[in-house]
Length: 518
Image (cartoon, rainbow, N blue to C red; front, side, top):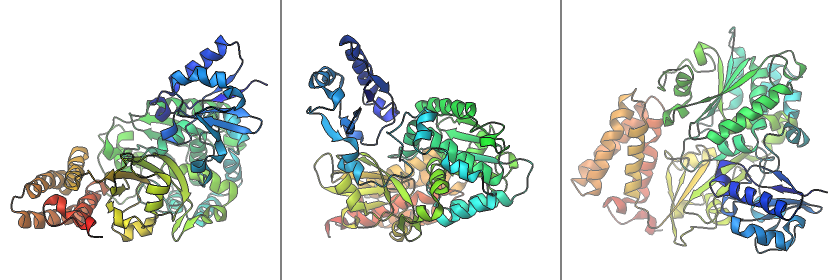
């Protein structure tokens, strides 16, 4: 039997040398006159072990990593095609502790299948959710999603079922479904992993949403920094179209759905749903006033379902296995699983999918292994560049929507970035304001002007210029941005600033560092 060797093709693994490793394995096999089948899968998310090479054996897939080109000859000498021992051997892939303890629903196939093989997707449970959705009415699909408790995984946490029901009940001659794949938050990469490791699950989720509300056209709005995602998505769309999962007669339902990838020009503000819709219409990406919401009047003024990649990719399992099954995961009003993206100064960066309720301490130390530098953890930012900073003594906070909000934070897109004790939090607060100033669309004054003034005020505080008056001014400025900004960019920028001031006043020259008092 010809052995199958799996080498990731996603951009994260490629950046670490996966393409060179795949080429070296193919060339070494040819030199030795050995047959093998090279499968380019997605990354499993263990990025400290990439490029991670797997080989199929009678006992299951065996992993080796991180594999560099210089190790390929030695792997062949050791008999890795039969899963034999080598210093890079990690054992059976499914038994790797970091993978085994996960609860993978959305990412169940990522790293397992060839992402552009529709037969592989079908063999691993693909399109079962769409098949069930095709037999249900739009209202029945909404009820299933409502039962699941699925909330938007893009940051706001808005119930997915309410968006679907609103679009379903909005009368129009045409409707749209739009995937917001403009993944711009620092320390996040889950959307990219789905699009490059299991694109069909996104296409299936969009088809379910389209059948639900009666949409006939869908768009995936992709950031320009993701060229590999664009290639993979377009290949998957062509395959799905050829097999009848897209086109004029989706799965024999008589309903039409066309999907198209649109690549943006690299603007962070286009991650906001209305700015993204403006960009899709060929206009400058600027935030719209609401109401009306997109589900009533969205793309080209028509009812539009807008969700991010992770939200739409969750629909297939909800429809296939039922809303009650999905709801069994999680805590409180945070139901299902969340792909946690762990980055920054951490030993084991990567993606970990788990039911809501795990603590930040478990994420940082048990999953991440602490800092890569070996120095103490000082701060953890949750939710992207607009997320709050949690000091080391606050790491027992649970990772779910309500618990993070109760501690003046937000879940955001599920990114967790770790900093050691060398970080200067005044500089990080200044960066938050600078980021907002750079990425603002300029439509509203609090965001456009407030962020620029915020940079200046923080600089004066850090330099010791009239600190008391400038501190009062900074708090007033943050209050104005929070309550008067048109969208979340300006409205959330004060979160990292105020959390840095609260927990790390010493970095602003105000008093002893509060984080060292606990």
